[in-house]
Image 1 (cartoon, one colour):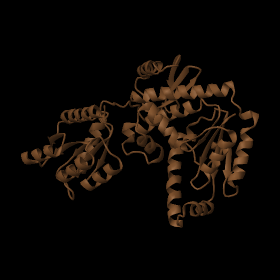
Image 2 (cartoon, one colour):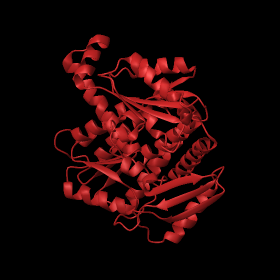
Image 3 (cartoon, rainbow, N blue to C red):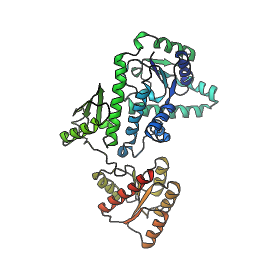
Image 4 (cartoon, rainbow, N blue to C red):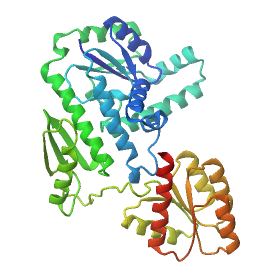
Length: 407
């Protein structure tokens, strides 16, 4: 028997069809929530954090933290574990984690036109047209972000699937019959080669995850595995490729199952971008808050030269809004700003986001301000013009405190 993966648009009968296909084939049905739960348990990560990576917009800090890519590697390992089963129906976004070269997986997409989806939303959930349109738009956008990130294509493109089922023209019963008929074809039965492709997928994901935890951005490395041999292509310019090659060989070689590692320049190696390895000893989610635009932009650039990426906002209201959506680790906060001042921002931050460490950086403070800020829970109080080494050290110490509290 083969594995069936189903990716569907909202209000396209995906759950109904998947449940029936699994029942007819006599195999388990697994969805995104089960995949998330298994990855959460296996790697000791909060399920909510994994779900956020799958379904929400990327974090503004992701270009510095690489958190999305690191969790994607773990999701691939989780999917590879599921694919050790010879019979399985998988429903959801995770279907796009499965490589095309695993030939015993039947990849199905179910989509319908808007009129059909609106009718189904009204019939099943009694949604108004306005509410249904909003949900369709929201979930279609999530699907687009996910597929672009994982597979680099369009969610509903026929090129990505073995079967594209138009659910505005098919009933759920007809869709089930078509899928089951296709599954039972001999060509979709597992073979030695297709099972080896699963093993290769698992090993490549494990190497990707191991390198990501060492600060290597997965998008800078193209990783493939075959029977214990691992090939890594460096996809960004690096000044000393031989040194990076030795580092990658050493780190990848420590992954169980790796017999040999080959490193070479990839197709993007000669582009202008420079390869950077993240330093996880420093915070990767830093927010700078200051109304002096030129100063704060220059500070952000100087921190980047020290491998510390940061997001920048220019007043207290913007800072509080961003933190509600995307909690940083360390905030560097000015005191004197128009609108909500720094002391009020600090009060709200420590009340609503106590795990965030706040470093005050001001050019107009006083001894009284220092006393108030430290009583409110600021990690440090620094004055402009700041010595960059001192700020760097304060940020490191703040992050050390965060990591100690996490463990």
